[in-house]
Amino acid sequence: MSPEASWATIAAYAADQLGEVAAGRGPKRHPNVEAAYSLYKGAIGAMGLNNHQYLVQYTQWTSAPDGRRAALEPNLVPYHLEAEISHWVLWHHPDDCHGKGGDVDDPSAEFLLVEEILRQEGCAPRADEAIIFQNHPSMRSVPTIAHSHVFFRPTNDERGRRLTTTLGTLREAWRARSPFDIPAGYERGEKLPPPAAAAGASANEHLLWSPGVLRSTVQTAAVIFFAWRQASRHPTTELYLRRLVEWWSSRLLSQAAAWQWWGALSLLSSSCCVIQLLLNSLSLGCAGFNTVLGPVRPAFLALTVIAQYHSVQVGLAARHLHVPMAVATAALSWSLTLAPELVYLYTM
Image (cartoon, rainbow, N blue to C red; front, top):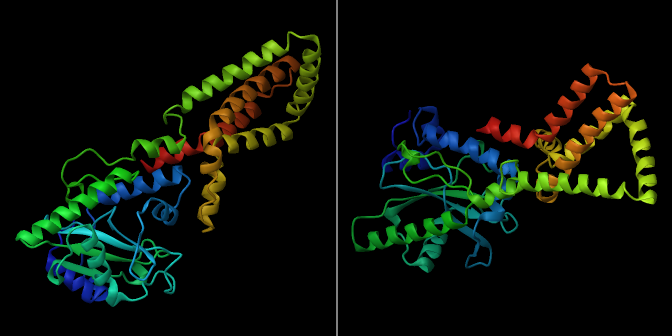
């Protein structure tokens, strides 16, 4: 485990990042925070977001004096620091930053911007109370959004205490709106409950255990089954339903068609999680399928259950059920259907 980084350690790192890294020095994250970072990435992936999209959506942007948007936010995954030091990030909105890639436009102006933001909030830091630097390009975890790391160590006097109060107010406001948080002290190895996504984020994940998803799935399946039974009692609708069943049965008895149906339904039931993972692995960004399809996922889950049940009935009635192939098809179908849950549990 790395020791707590001191103010002198941070200052030396800010002056010569590559040299400090080569010498094995510089601030590092506590193992608790590294584990929490993996949990965070899994949580936002289930929300249909990547790091870039999450930050743009949940950061509280303010207008800088030059009209461009910026934000001073607590670092979600801070370095392992001495207790009196806090780790923040000065973000620049990607649509407003004119630098190349993730470079800030004017590194020398970063302190002035931090000073202006905190002055509006109640108390600006003095020069000896802050260290600000931008990571070397090879060490940026979010290279698509220009940002600087900001470290505060308020002095032990009246003004320093006002700065501490101002930072505390900003942190609490950030915790109130952020779907993900690391408890204070967790980054220093204190024994605390592991961080987790807030209730709002849990609902947005649309997992089976997310609020309302399982109940909605069961209710949808019941409604479909009841509607089918009621419709089959009327001669006209019963005729159309019989033709639909015959058509569907003929499709199901063709194994190739069965694979296509289960693949399509399962992908929709997973909010296209598998397609999402493929796009991310190819560095094509986040397609946001969960944002669009997540709310209707219970309907597709219900349809998958009913369709699987009906396929078994058709196979048994026609005596064409090939057990090994049926098991393989069902395994593929449910692996795709439950892909979001599997990804979430893997990241846990």
